[in-house]
Image (cartoon, rainbow, N blue to C red; front, side, top):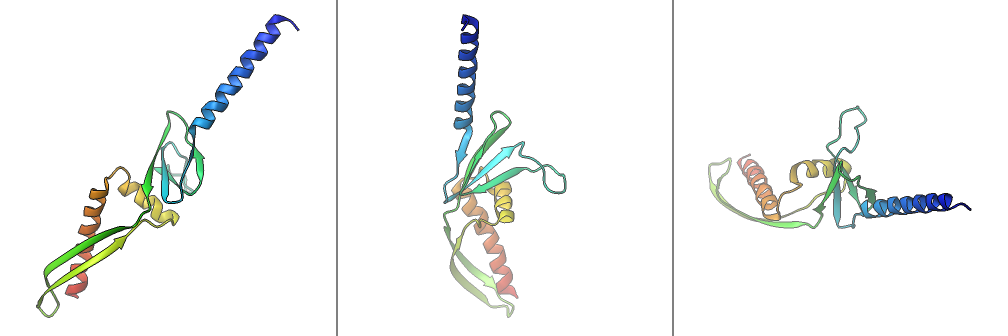
Length: 145
């Protein structure tokens, strides 16, 4: 075989091997206790609108370099102590309602997508504060009716 053909085959083999390594380095696995949120250019919805992110639970996906990135959302339930004081009931009686709520992210596709849009990038303390504010409002509404 001529030297040029051997060099060409070596270059092609190195190129294929390098592409294979790049592919392996960008293939991401998602553990079962987390949701992997891939964002960037992730495709379109069924109605043709652009998707903001793609959520994967307990699987794996290829994350394209430069045009996509990823983060994880934790599925571990969070306990939140809510100590509602002096809430006004429907009978105009002030009552105290100490409560503990356990909240978490569901693995249903719509809920995962909403969680990705609203919670991705927030710290645990910020998520707890947001949940506590929502619970306070709903608890006051329930007591008042």
